[in-house]
Image (tube, rainbow, N blue to C red; front, top):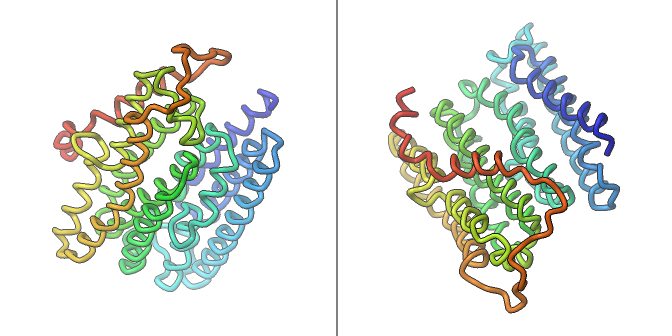
Length: 344
């Protein structure tokens, strides 16, 4: 892709997300989401491959459906209340608005587009889709969280955690595994959106950090399948060790960063006397733990019979080493800072 065109699309992505995050007007927020969607489509199709075009088409149709539902809900809301203020939606329209935004996020059972779209795009585009594209809808959900239906968030959260774990078990493609990982993590975040929006935001920030670290590691290793990552140990042992630890952090094992949001969310559910929800959440998260541990085992504890003899890799392109190092450190070492972060 032409660098100038790529720069224009990336700037449009930034402008669209910023417009949505800063707006208090439903129509402006909707326009920002549309700019975001339209700017990402050419980036997804920068490699003219049938899978990329299929992924971009699925992404466009899904986002267009969610946008249509969101705009319809906003219009009805304006008709009922006489204003376009985001912070004060009509009770009748809160559920359709929430469902439209959750569809944009890829929460179960509105998740079917996400694994297929991620599988059809390059790792760099997958990184944008899993992190940056989630920010504007998440900010909108946080803004309407006082009026959101508690039963809806709990059902969507538990379903997403279950589907995120169940869907990832049989996968061999790393991008699909990251898609189901994203669904599961967003389920944890949505679960306590109504009860504690600040904790939801904190968990979402940690999700962004861990997912960015994982995608940057995969970009540096140039791997998209389990069969490729299983023979990468001899080429880059340090990177593979870091990747293993990031996977364990995504699984939520102590003493890594990923344990922090899961612990705080379970404590919040128990504090709200939602013991059954907390129990179901922990039991369904064991499915996700299984496929993370399976991937960890393949990454570091097995050596393929066709292990590459060379200990060096072809260095034909510059890799994002500094961003990968920074995000990897943050994805592994933030747990001891939990008390300081909570006091902020």
